[in-house]
Length: 395
Ligand SMILES: Cc1ncc(COP(=O)(O)O)c(C=O)c1O
Image (cartoon, helix red, strand yellow):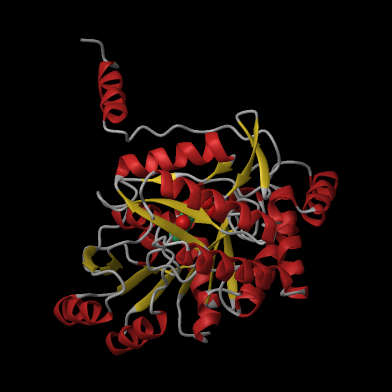
């Protein structure tokens, strides 16, 4: 037996179970229509909520930053100094989120990995986490030695029960939730979570990856949506979704940010985002500050698409955001639906199956964007309906 044989075995098994991930290759910029594996298709699965990924103003800002600062930061910020650009983006992100300060990370994933073990490192600490939280939160929790308790999805009564049982013996407590849940598009009851947290003296951390650019005034995120400024200790953000670039950050009270700059390991031991990334993200914040048009268009598109799909007979689950799961439940039907959309209708919309969602909860996850025109949405609704009928999903 060779030392790498386990890889063949596990990959074969994944293929047999329909769990092998095939990664398609995109040959164009992100947008409503993209070229995938040589074919022009309607893009219904990107996180490019506001169309920033190929925005001329962002591209110009990135090019200018390359001329002024070069392509890389060349070191970890704490070791070799920080660029003015990074400091400026942190200031602008904090302002945008209505928080005192912000710290940049290389990605939203790293923001979760770095922040959780920094705040609650010890076995004397307690983490209370929603059962459907994102993988990066789960991994961040794993990096801490704190006691961990999972509460039922969105269930504030269960959260209260868990805290009543476990909080009295805890040194520090951190409650963690996604803001918008990325597979179902439902929203955490953050106002009620904060009330419960205040009762137990617990810190609150929300991952706003799918909320910023989407929820709140002009896309200022879930804290703004609920008017909870100053009552949430950690707002994790990503620059890779609505902001159209790549990178992550935490916004919150100045002392939380100061603490993370001393303690968060991805900040201390990994290089900063590149100058063009940072400059492009700065341009996105400027545009969002200037105008709510893109956010409005995103919501108009979302409301229209959902209503029409429901009229056609589709089940769009519990979503109240642009993340629109077209629930098919059966894994094979979901895979076949996605294949037919791509091959017969030139629509790129991926099937999401176990283990990303529970068994028997397979779906096509449609991501609505401000870049979609009404014609694009009508085209998608028509093709979904035709294929849905062919597969007996709707009548
Ligand atoms: C809820 C949530 N948190 C964090 C991330 C990671 O963000 P990034 O792509 O910036 O690492 C994602 C991305 O899928 C996400 O959905």
